Image (cartoon, rainbow, N blue to C red):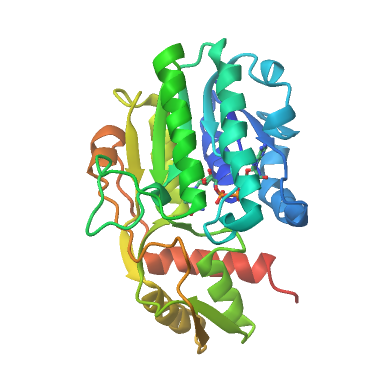
Length: 316
Ligand SMILES: NC(=O)c1ccc[n+]([C@@H]2O[C@H](COP(=O)([O-])OP(=O)(O)OC[C@H]3O[C@@H](n4cnc5c(N)ncnc54)[C@H](O)[C@@H]3O)[C@@H](O)[C@H]2O)c1
C-alpha cells in the first residue's frame, strides 16, 4: 500500500512515517516544504532515519506548487499533517502564513485528490478548534476557536467536509491534543522548559501556570493515527486523540525539576491571547473506533524528551 504523508519532516509527520514503515507492505511518499527555512537542520534531523529506508521517498516541495498528480500516482491513503502550527504566532500579519499553509494548501490537496480514488484522506486537526470548554470535551461539542490558528485549522476541517459531500472524498478527521516527546517543536512548552532548566535560563510562564492540558505522548498519538488506516466506520468521523494524563503547567515544571534535579527559574508573564485555560479530551470515540489506549505517562514521556533534547539541542 502506498501512502502520502504531508508535513513528513515535521515533529509528528516524521514519527508517523517511521511507524508506518514498520509495516512491511507499506511504502511512504513524504512531502515537506521546509516552510520555515531557519528550521532546516531540525527537519533534516527528523528525516535522518527515514532517508535510509528504501520504502520511503522524500520530496522537498510546497504543497501549493507541487506536481500532486504525479505524487499521488498509486497512492491509496493520504495523511495531511502539513500546516503552520502554533497559537502564539497566529496573530497580526503572520496570519497570512496560516491562511496559505492551513487553508489554501489544504484546498489545493483536496482538489488534487478529487480525480484520484483514495480509500482514506486523514486530516490532522487540533483541540484548538474547541476553544474554552469546561470538563471533558467530546467531538459533538460546538467548535468555538479562540485563536486565528484554531480558525485556520477548523476551516481546513470544513473544506474536507465540503469536498467529501460533493466529491465523496473519504475524509477522516483526527483532533490531536497537545503532543510531547522526542522531536517536539522548539517553540512548544516542554521543549522550552527542559532547555531552560538545563541551561539555567529563565522560563516564561504565560499566566499563573495553573492552566491544564491534556498531554499526549507522540508514540500513543501515532498508534491511534496508524489505527485509522484499517479502522472501519471512521469515514466522515471526527475523532479526538488525547493522552493518558492531564496536568497543569506548574505540575509539569515540578516534575521536570525532579527529573533534571535542578530548580527552574520562572518568569510569569501575561496570559496568552487565544490560549484556553484547560483542555481535556473525551477519547471514548477513539477507544471504540480505533481501539485507542494511550499508555505513556507524563513522567516516562518527559524522560524520553529530555534524552532527545540533551543529545540534539544542547551545545556541548
Ligand atoms: N504539535 C502538536 O501538539 C499538535 C497538536 C494538534 C494538532 N497538531 C497538528 O499536527 C500537524 C503537525 O504538527 P507538528 O507539530 O508536527 O508541526 P511541524 O511544524 O513540526 O510540522 C509541520 C510540517 O509541515 C510542513 N509544511 C507546512 N506547510 C506546508 C506546505 N504548504 N507544503 C509542504 N509542507 C508544508 C512544514 O515544513 C513542517 O515540517 C499540524 O497539522 C498541526 O496543526 C499538532
